[in-house]
Length: 464
Image 1 (tube, rainbow, N blue to C red):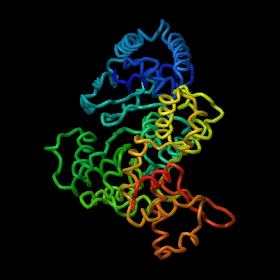
Image 2 (image 1 turned 30 degrees about the vertical axis):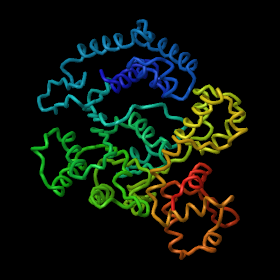
Image 3 (image 1 turned 180 degrees about the vertical axis):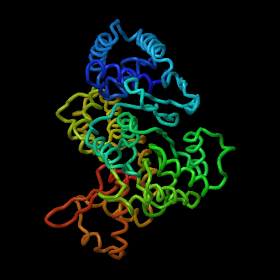
């Protein structure tokens, strides 16, 4: 059994017996123990204390023991679940059933599941063919903090409203990838195929289409058409006939630096054809794009009544306190200050929390005596590629905004600036799509600013 099968198998057994699903932390504990991780490591990746993990784990082993009618512990979890699934397979042999990445079926026409894939099934509904998953390119799933609303929005858009194309955008570290992984767990049973691909190395469209079609059609490259138009046509035909969920991560790598947000690198320009066809044509599938900034097709096609949607992630708010608890930080009355300063970005908060733990032994109040906003090398390195990809117009604007102590209006920005109103509008709009400018309404006037972390980076590092 792979880790995804473990989570699914245990969750289905618990639900069948109790009517309740496992929550995110219980799943994280199951996954971690299955992979031989210590409770301390599970606590770190789940942003909570080791004591809390031990308490929840104890309750989880008792619940599984009641469900399986035999004692389940941290040490025997793997052997117990594997033995139980072997028993279920023997009881269901002759029916369609997926086990250990092999599709066991009496129907010779059922598609063979490749060995490197991770299919899922529901033991409670054998009338439905098993969902085929390819998550080999996906990162390790971690606990998701305070994203209930975002998950509900995406689930409604994709499952109920049959959205065809959705973009999840936001700064690096804000949680786009984690949100998508947890979304898969919630909605995968609504699809026949689920596939995750990362574009971190900027693959040409031809390669991405090949990878998608090889899995979806279960055919080697030699049996696929050679031209991009033919491959694209074959993919669209498959998406019309089947219900597929495709996630493309790190989409910003195919977008161009030095231009306004959403433009493609010259060698990746033909991705726009793929995104536009999926967003504009009728089919039964959904493509999710995770990116620092949405591609231009998203901004052109999205709408409440459109099959194209966009979700821009912001910070996680008060739930970020779990990061500080996991790091054993002290002076909890000061935590809100840190969360607001670092805008609830999980990665930024984890970086500063580590600094406070290592230098001040967790005493936040002592840290704040010296520096309300610490921008160390690790955080600066995280921001650098995002600021560095700005156009010259955006760099000029973000420098101007960073020099302002307070939010400023359009009129103030145009004063003493060698910019036309249209240039200013384009620059502000692009910075907004990159999540690098904050916008607020005040007395019927729109005001603009940058968050403290970005301001500190810009003032400390020449970007113009």
